[in-house]
Image (cartoon, rainbow, N blue to C red; front, side):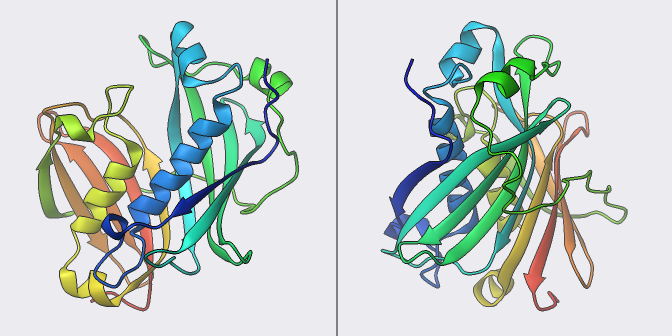
Length: 250
C-alpha cells in the first residue's frame, strides 16, 4: 500500500470564476479547496471514499471553523496544507492552512469528521483510524474545541432554494460548501461588497437531498450572526452557522 503522507499539500490557482466583484476568492471556494485536500489526503489510505464505501461507510463533516486573515486574489497561487491531528470519541479532527507561495497564512481552519454507516447513519468507532492513519498529535493550527452552535431565537427568513442535481455530491447529499454559499447569498450586495468575513463556523445536523426545498434564515447581533438552513417539508434543521464580520453589519 502507498504510504500516507503525514501532512498533505496541494497547490491551487485562483481562477476568474472563483472570485467575487472585488477580485477575491469567495469563502465557499476556499472551503472547497480544503474539502478537496482532505479527500485527497485520504485517497491512499484504508479510509478513502472507495474503501469506506465498500464497507458501507462514508465520511461526513460534522463541524468546521475557518478564520480568514486575508483573501487570495484572482490569479494568486495558494497552497493548501492539511493533517489529521487526533480523534475525540467518534470525531476525527483535522486542521488546515491556506497560505501564499511566500508562506503567509491567509486562512486557517479546524474541523471534526464522523464515519457514518450508509444505511443507519450511526457513527462508527475510530479505533482502526487512530491505529493506521498518520495523525500529527499535538499539532494544532487552531487549538479550539468545536462545540454546538446554539439555536436561533429570532429567525428572519432571507432566501429559499430548491436542491438541484448540480448541488449533490457522490454521497447523494448536498455538498458541504453549498450551505456556506447559500448562507452568504442571503446577505445584501452592499454587505458582501464592503464587509470582510472574519470567521465562519458551521455545524452540520442532517443532509439535504435532491428536490428538497430549503429556507435560509439569519439572526443578526452586534458581534456575530447566526444562520440556519431548514427543509420546508418537515422544518428539519440541516445546518447552523455563526459568522463574524470585520466591523458591524447593519
